[in-house]
Image (cartoon, rainbow over all chains, first blue to last red; front, side, top):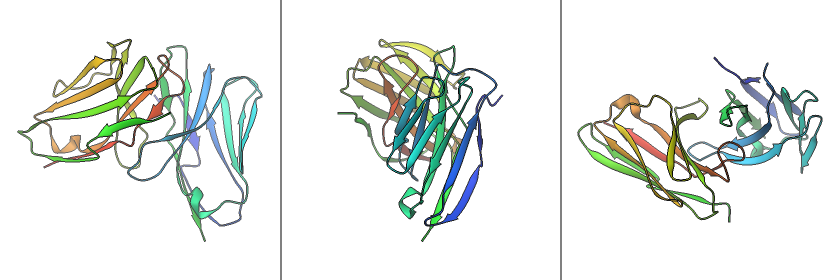
Length: 110
Length: 112
């Protein structure tokens, strides 16, 4: 059973475009992390959100945690080729283990 | 320092070989993890060590044997692997079991 649903699974856009990636669950998270992973490398932690309704910004990336703490989104403004990679959301549920979503593979073309 | 170091970065082994993957962190984290990641898939949890004790084994075959010699080190001993075990093996650590795991660069394992 996939506890975390990420969408879209794959996204190919032109440089300069905006995009949003979604992460949804029917369960409540105690916290949620977003990671970015490049081929052959380990995931790199981008942000952790804990409070319902929380918004965090990291340069051109905006992360939002839903009020009910069941969903999250990642918005990238003016995407650049360097943003290409696999974006993973990972939630912590009552069992205190990190559970990954299926990932969104982003390709930004110059 | 938020670094988790894994060695080797690449490993090719035969099905009759015995090898070990190593992971080290100096962040004082008390939880350490092994994940397996196949191509185009998210990481899948294999083992969790909490305070140097194995707390979770996600039904991993016995040909994978984890070891936590101390709070900074985590090993994964490999024996009699199958070609389908070829994957990226990731080590991670966190302050406690659960959130904000920091990952190493992984070991790309190929079983021939």
